[in-house]
Image 1 (cartoon, rainbow, N blue to C red):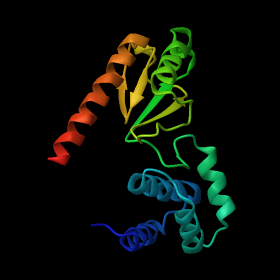
Image 2 (image 1 turned 180 degrees about the vertical axis):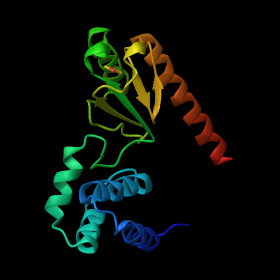
Image 3 (image 1 turned 60 degrees about the vertical axis):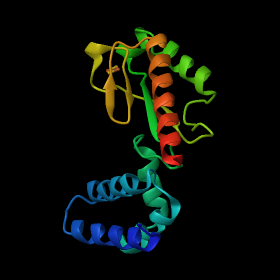
Image 4 (image 1 turned 90 degrees about the vertical axis):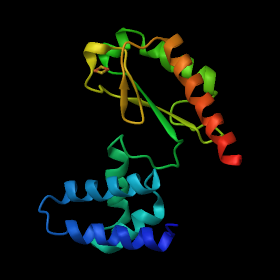
Length: 170
Ligand code: FES
């Protein structure tokens, strides 16, 4: 089992390995990505640790983490649904897809369901405009979406999650 202490030492080791890089901001972004990869989000304790290890104010780290939309500053669900709100997707009905998700999951953009299964986010162009409207679930792009296809996909994920939970209890 990975303890908080293990996570802390792994992060400090990661910071040390990147220390020689000249571009300070990309170095900091790489470190923040690492935190998010391990924790699922960038937590305050990690920001303080990075600040101490890199000798920079926590406020600066917070500034970078909030500037880039891909960093989560709150715990997120097992499935992160990002609905593309870029122009191509928007004109092809991204709003109706986002509304459907909000209705089914009973959350707003930026929120996580109570069971910790889903987080809803909005994204700018996901680079797949030819397949608009597009959404991404945990880094996998799904194109030519409709509210109905989205609802079916969520239903399937919920069913599988329930199945896994039941199997885990046996
Ligand atoms: S606008 Fe949605 S993928 Fe480009």
